[in-house]
Amino acid sequence: MISKMKKKLGFILGLAGMLALAWAKAHAEDAAAAAPAMSQEVTDMFTNNKVAMDTLWTCVAAMLVFWMNAGFAMLEAGLQQAKNCVNICAKNFVVFAVSSLAFWLVGYGLMFGDGNPFIGLKGIWMLLGPDNSPATGAAYQGVYNSMSWATVPMLAKFFFQVVFAGTTATIVSGAVGGRIKFNTFVVFSFILVAIMYPITGHWIWGGGWLAVRGFWDFSGSTVIHSVGGWASLAGVMVLGPRIGKYRSDGSVNPIMGHNMAIATLGCLILWLGWFGFNPGSTMAASPNDISRILITTNMAAAAGTMAAYFTAWAVLGKPDLSMILNGCLAGLVAITAPCAWVGVGSSIIIGAVGGVLVVFVVLLFDKLKLDDPVGVFGVHLANGIWGTLSLGLFASAPYAGGAAQPPLGLLFGGGMKGLIDQAVGVATVGVFTFVVSYIVWSVLKAVIGIRVSREEEIRGLDIGEHGMEAYADFQIFTAK
Image (cartoon, rainbow, N blue to C red; front, side, top):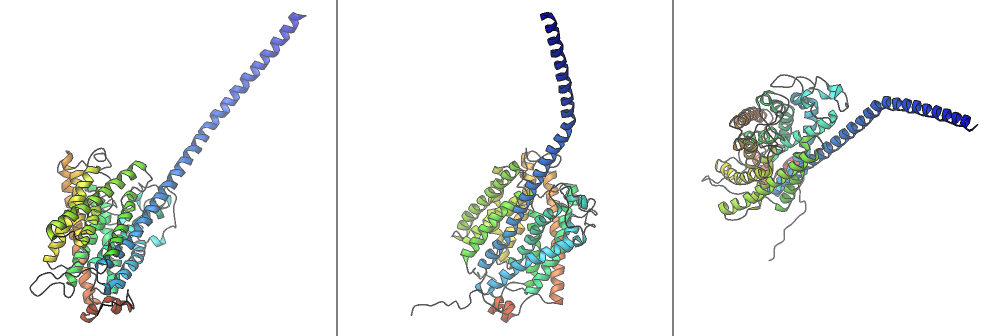
């Protein structure tokens, strides 16, 4: 009896074990079949999160660059006379609106559209394109391939680039301040952003001939700042100096800025904005890259500030505040091209050289009787050139030398090729921008006029051009 019960129990246990094994096998097969789907789901989740973070970072950085318009307005207004304050603010406000429209209608396609080595030919009328695209850019395939490296949506790319374009135009505002007709400046700004800036930008950032040759410019020392500087130089040469700037014997009669507190605020806003300008060019929320570029940017600005401080003290006898402010901006402009590919030590040297350079360049252009009220030539032109060339000197490992990176700089064993390629880019962009700008300024002078009347200039552009004053009803009382 007991034996029979043992047999039945063994049979039941064996059957249960077989059923358990069969269930486990079936469950394992189901899990294995579901694993690829689950893995793909997880992958898609991480991809979507990355695109979202990249897009958020790119847009926030672009907003910081947009805020630089306020910095330029305050800096330029403070460094010029009170009678022209409204005019300066109006130019800096309107110029971004003009730039946005010009870049949307024509400029973006000329700069980033697929075409030939010299100009983009597709997507020129972006207004007629689709409103947006997924991160893959499927709606823009075969149109803006030069921007395919960034995974953010196309309109995020456009927004980041349009604030850059606006910066290029607003650089010109300060150099031609105090004597240019408002409407003429607006027309020139449209032409600059719609045509001139995008053409040279295509050579470098749009996959054009300079990019193929090996020219590198991470955030625009040449693409933006030198272009703005060359356009300014041509404008100043056609305009001539402000009344009273140079005495009959050729000596300089300084025309002081009316509000150095506003100018200082403007410089601080620009310093802040550069933390979007340079790191934002990654168009990706990459912690290591963003952190490194923030530090190289900041240290170059600090070094430029102190270098200009000591240089101005030695040359002028006093630590001139306008030179100190421009020294900060000089360091920022200089580090803009190499910020992603140099070490912190190199960034300090680059910024310091920029701070020394800006003092001597400002004094040089004054001796040449090229009247630049805010120091555009020293800050943006000279240091746009220096910063671009510095990449050929200081690019270093592990940030340079790879297939998708610039070659090592001359001072880090890279040889002369990188420096030569940088020099070729500086020269060709400079010649093109200066010549075309000079022609455009000259045509505008002949067709619609470029300079206000002598009476209006003496009285101030605020009243003559805008019919209002920045400091209405403000009176100065002196003790009797």
